[in-house]
Every structure is written in structure tokens, then in C-alpha cells.
Length: 119
Ligand SMILES: [Zn+2]
Image (cartoon, rainbow, N blue to C red):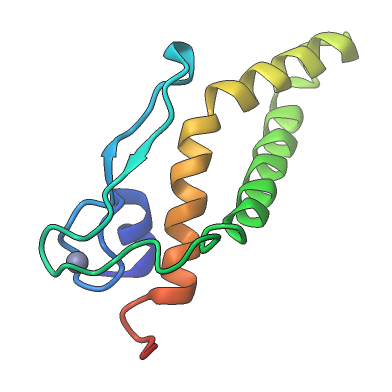
């Protein structure tokens, strides 16, 4: 299984079978995603130390900026008001917040702790 598929399907970076998140979260219900502490299949510990996911904030930032740019390029020809586009972009960022949270943590784990790493 490639890393991209593992990130999107939210599977363990070591075995590729266990689920990383027990709850996906819902921004409309103010519900954050919940991570499992260990992989149910191989027992791999996802958060190795406190602050392990600090760097995933930078991944999340890049993801959000990319989404905002793509959204702006898609809608700027149909919506003339710049303020309306800004409001829609803010709504998009809120609606995709849990998705971005999960994807950034998954990308961070695969980056630091993928199958080929021997740490
Ligand atoms: Zn595993």
C-alpha cells in the first residue's frame, strides 16, 4: 500500500491495517477527531511523545492555503464580490477543519514514521 493511499484511508503507518482515528469529527457539531493511542493490529504507538504532532500544524497550514487558492481560482470568475469570496473561503476552512486535522496528522506520521523508517 502506498503512503498516499495510507494517508487518505487513515491507516497505521507501520502495518497499513489498523485505523488511526476512532472518530472522524464534525465541525458542524463542534466535534474534534479522536485518535486511537495504539494501532489495533500491530500495537504501534501513534503519538510517540508529547508535542509529536506540533509539526503537523505546518502541514495543515500548507493544506489550508492550497485549498483556499484552489477554491479562489474556481469561484473568482463567477463571484465578483471579493468580500463574498473571503467569507466563502472562511466557511470552507471551517467545514474542512476536521478533514485537514486528520490529513495533516496522517501526512506527518507517514513522513516521520512510515514503513521504511527504522526509528
Ligand atoms: Zn499498525
